[in-house]
Amino acid sequence: MRKTIAAGLFASVIGILLILFLPRTSEAQEKYLIRFSTGLPEDHFIMNQYKECATLIQQRSKGAIKVEIYFSAQLFKDIEVIRAVQMGAVESASSYSVYLSKSFPEFLIFHVPFLFKATEELSKVAKSEIWDSLKKNPEKNNIKILAAFPWPQEAQGLLSKKSVKVPSDCKGLIARIQDPPQSALIKLWGGGGSYLSGAELYMGLQRGTINGGFGSVATIWERKLYEVAPYFIEIPWGAMMTIPIMNMGFFNKLPTELQNVVTDAFKEVEGRSNQRAMEEYNAALNMLKGKCNVYKPTKEEMILWEKDTHPIQISTLESVPNGAELLNRVTSFLKSKN
Image (cartoon, rainbow, N blue to C red; front, top):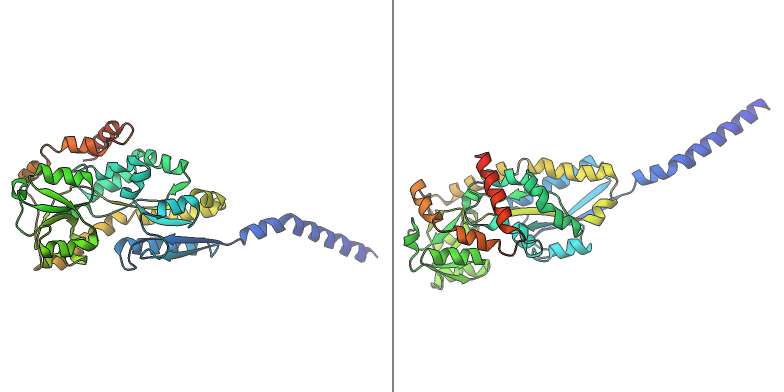
């Protein structure tokens, strides 16, 4: 009799414990899917960083989060992903400072001519209070900023069909441009600009519609532009930041431990992003040897390139509330770090 009562009490206790802890067990077993959209090709150096983030998230979440990466704009084009993430059409995506600036103009700071001289400077800003302030508006508008992966700043420059070493060499140069700052720069140096897509660049140079263009070492190699324009001068006319984003509503629904898994994974990979950018730059330079004449200006020549560009820096931020203040903050920050 006593054994029967004891067995009944034991079963009751076990039943109560199961009821108390079952919800927690169910919650721990809930699975989450992150679809990540990017326009980058599968073998791009930044794409490889996204793959690493995905692997870390899946491993450290112990399978609670599955990450599916859709490359080459299989889901959305680069210009569409901000809205898609904001509306929850996709959980996460790769964006760029240039596209974010259309909705959040403060990101134009990365496109101010000659503000950033090196990739390292971009990384320093991305780890500062300045970056924290830049993230506020997107996060108020349902976009979680996860990290900042720089493109190699040293690789930026001007491609041409003739040798260009100082601004006066740009006289008569019709360059492919992508935005108003580039248009203002080439005009300042005595040339002219023409808006062409990246797909039109090779043919434009080949046919003589243009005889130069703003670009990067990687662009020259990937598009084989050295075949039609064999000269390139490295000048830091602007910067580019790749910025992975996530739907804020989706992020907030994740349990705290899984939120930390996501943010820590991106932070860890971001910590190596500067090195990856420089590796990409050096690899592209090595591949271009013997195919393109790459010129690095002297300090004296760089002074000539930067001369009278301050008004263009100011005008780049004219749509940014307190743009002049933001420019001064970044300029002072960079001076303090050099």
